[in-house]
Image 1 (tube, helix red, strand yellow):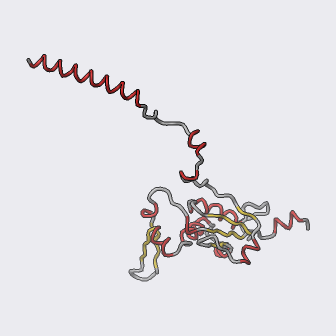
Image 2 (spheres, one colour):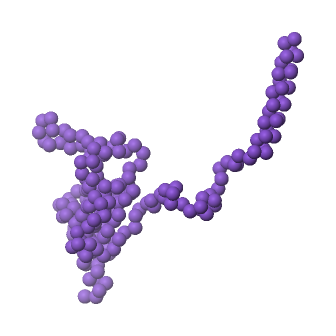
Image 3 (cartoon, rainbow, N blue to C red):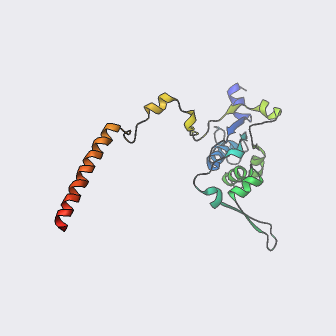
Length: 196
């Protein structure tokens, strides 16, 4: 068996950094790798997926007000067992739960789903066990670019940024002030003339 064939049939370990990324985008990348859809040998009935390691799940980002608006529901099966948690409450309880539920929802609803979920490894920060770190073969790029803070820009980049308004100039404002005063005095004089 050639090395290319061996690489196709072997289970690889992919690393994804979830820092400042939406859970849905991370889940899409994970579900493709867990199912093995990125391989030429993929078939829906075969279990040919790879392992996916997701780090920094504690630092995921929702857009808008989804931390308070998005609700996760479950039912114990007993009367009065309906439970609801907002995304913020669930994330505080378990920092890995939101990414886990997002990936679980994107996998096919068949008997392979539990096996695929066993190959998903979630970590709330960037600390990995040595045995998992030794198995990693590739780090996948983040789906969205992380916006930089204002303090991370250099002075040259700030100067090159287009100005949205003209800076305050003392001579220009003095002329405008003088013209405004003349206009106001004309209006007052005109108003006094009409009243008298």
